[in-house]
Amino acid sequence: MRERITAIIAIFLLLILIAASYWYAMKSTYGNLKYLPSEDSPDFIATGATVVSFDNNGIAKTKVKAQDFQHFSNDRVTMEKPEYTSVSPNEPVTHAKADHGQSDDGGATVHFQGNVEITRAASDNSDITRLQTQSLTVETDTNHFETNDFVHITNGENTATAVGMALDNMKSRVKTISLPKAGNVDLLPHSK
Image (tube, rainbow, N blue to C red; front, side, top):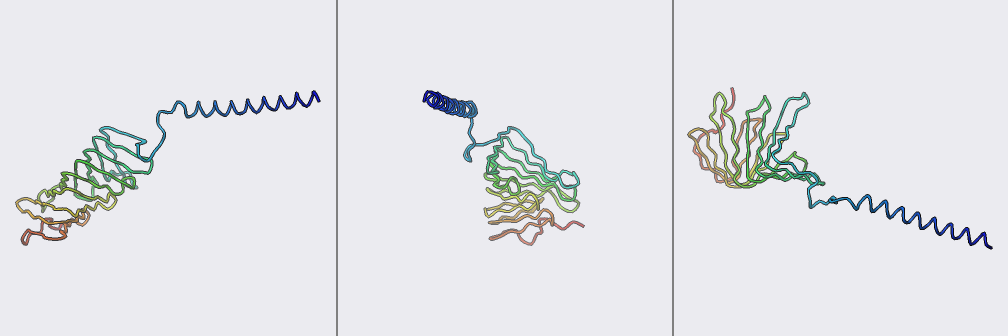
């Protein structure tokens, strides 16, 4: 009988030791954490950073710069004062900047908001082209820019306004969606 009581006490002490060890392990693992991941709080913050994308040959394709980047665990990125630049050698250099930006798919599509300005570099047969609007969606892989807002387009002395616009930088085409007012002017003449 005495041996049974000793065994029961030993088992009871071992269970207390196991419970205390588990509690201590959990307390030391999570107790010192100052941040627990959440979709509402960023898991990475960068100030004054630039992100450069490269093609398969290692040639720079696009550059995204922002005053502040915040990356979230669901691959959402928010940006303050973002600037997007296409730097691919086969395309005209196009630069877009805005007050705010966001990407919900890790940077494949970037949405710009507030005082958006797109500038397309001059080419042999075209002056600098500027587009101004309040929102813009950029598909970074295809270098396609689109808005449904009012847009003001300037190319040299030529100007146009419209509600909605799509710029295909690869094909050097601007397509206005509705209410265009420009006259008979091709704002982005074809390259020779």
